[in-house]
Structures are given as structure tokens and as C-alpha cells.
Length: 116
Image 1 (cartoon, rainbow, N blue to C red):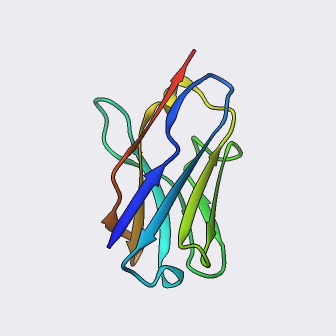
Image 2: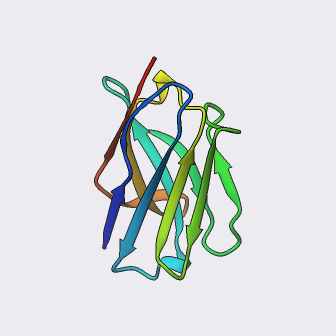
Image 3: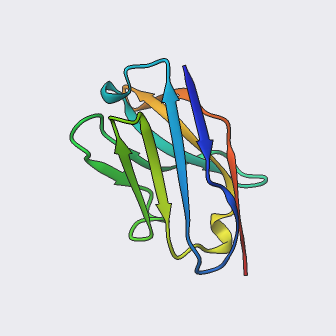
């Protein structure tokens, strides 16, 4: 299984970025997918998730109403649209395939840096 994340970069506070994760080696449409992040010196934390086929989503309180997770089962991709970015959103962002709501597979991180 490979999860290839992309789209990270540097942006000023208030800006936007869109992360994408391309999946291979799994039946993507059957997997709940998620984004996590890890800021320097902190533990990895949940950001958002999306169910396999219903598109039902969940968000951490810290990103609710600013971030939107979506998926394209035809292209085996999951995306994270991030608007209204804040310096505290600075982190390595990871996509993950969830099994029983826990991460089973991880992608490599993509770095998001938000300057004030």
C-alpha cells in the first residue's frame, strides 16, 4: 500500500492550501481515509476523516469550518482544502487509511508552514 501526499508549502496567515493524497495497493473505495498532522515538539493529532462511500466527514474542533476533506473514489485520491490558515496549523500533514477508525496505513508527510 502506498499513500503519496502532496501540496504542502509555505503560506501567510489567512491563506489557503490544498493537500492531496494518491492511494495505491488497496481497494480505496472501501477505506475510511483521514488526515493527521504533527507540529514540531508535539504528538501527531487527528485533523479530519471521511467515510468510504457515504462521504460522511469528521473534523477536529481546531479546524472545523476552515478545512474540508473530500475524496474521489474514481481517482483513488483524498484531499484536504485548508482555508483561513493560522500559524498554529504549521505541521507535517499525513494521510492515513483507517481500519476500524484507527490508522492502518500512513503516507509520508507533507510540510505546511504558515507565517504570521
